[in-house]
Image (cartoon, rainbow, N blue to C red; front, side):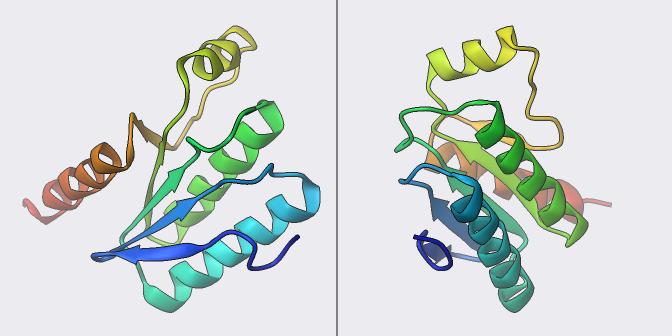
Length: 125
C-alpha cells in the first residue's frame, strides 16, 4: 500500500483526507506526496486531515502530519487535523511533542468551520 492508498476528497473549496491506515514510512511518504499534488492541482485553500480512524498516533505519525501541514501552508493552504483521541493528545504532550504550525479541531465539521473562519479573517482588511 503506497501511492493513492488514502483517498483525498473535495468538500467545497477544501480537501478532506481520512487516514484509516497506519502511516508507516512508505505510506507516509506517499500520503504527503499525494496530498501536495492534489493541493497543487486543485489550489485548495484548506485541508482537513481526519485521523479518527487511527488507533495509534505516535511521534512519527504526529511529525508526518505536522510536516504535511507546514508544507501545505507553504503552498498557501491552511491545515486542520481532526479526530485526535484524548489519550493520544495527552501522550503526545507528555512526550513533549506539539503539532506546531497545524490547527486542530475535534471533528470534521469543526475542522471545516475552522477553515471557514480562517478564510473569513483573510478576507477582512
